[in-house]
Length: 82
Image (cartoon, rainbow, N blue to C red; front, side, top):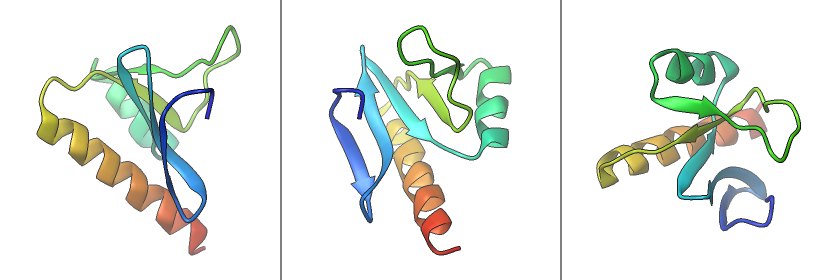
């Protein structure tokens, strides 16, 4: 996705890295929460508008990075089962 190393579940993207940041797909309300708390930034590929279900993160500990990826994978997997 976007020419970056990525992770998929059931053929759908849920996380990738870009310019040293972890980018994950989460519910829009969760993305808004992370941005409001200062833990994340909007994901805007190129000069386009922000993607509402994607957030750029820079976790400093491995456990936080893994937790965000699990949260994203679970979100995407649940969407597939709807």
